[in-house]
Figure 1 (tube, rainbow, N blue to C red):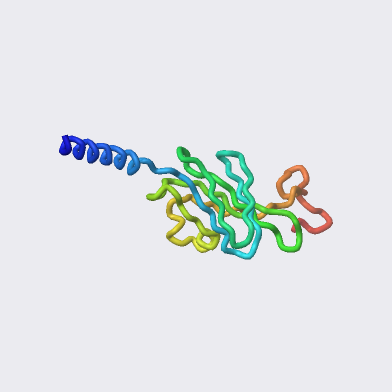
Figure 2 (figure 1 turned 120 degrees about the horizontal axis):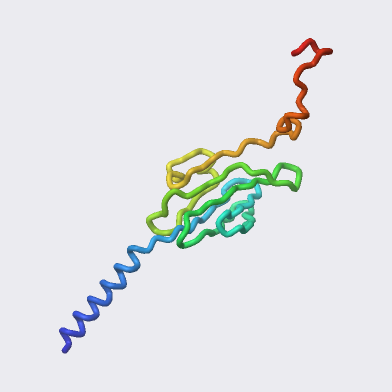
Amino acid sequence: MVITYKKMMILFVACIMSLVVNVHACLTTFINDKGVRVIIYDKNDKAIIPVAKNEKRRFGSQHKHAHFAIYVQQPKVQTFSRVYVCKQNECGGNGNVQLKFSDIENNTPATRLFAIKKSEPYSSMVQNLSMMKKKSCNACGDE
């Protein structure tokens, strides 16, 4: 009876461990190691996550790869501009990927799980509207 109990306990522990080993969550911990205020916009959950200087925030889903945009506060004003868009390609080994802002800026090996796209600065509305552009300038000599 004691041998049967031990065998059952070993089997039970092995079953639980096999379940735990195969579960890989796709949570992301963003660490703001820069001296600026950052806002994370989680595109999956449609949530805005403020991250203060030298702070870290955890977000994401257990079943979906992370997809988020990073906004940085502009100096001397209260506006934020998007600087990066990140999409997770695969989940981390331990289920919680730690991503530092400096790693994203320097493109270190810690970012290998993500597809990171640097956002272009916003252009003027005049540059985007073709009807606002002048085809030629007679007074300027067609410069």
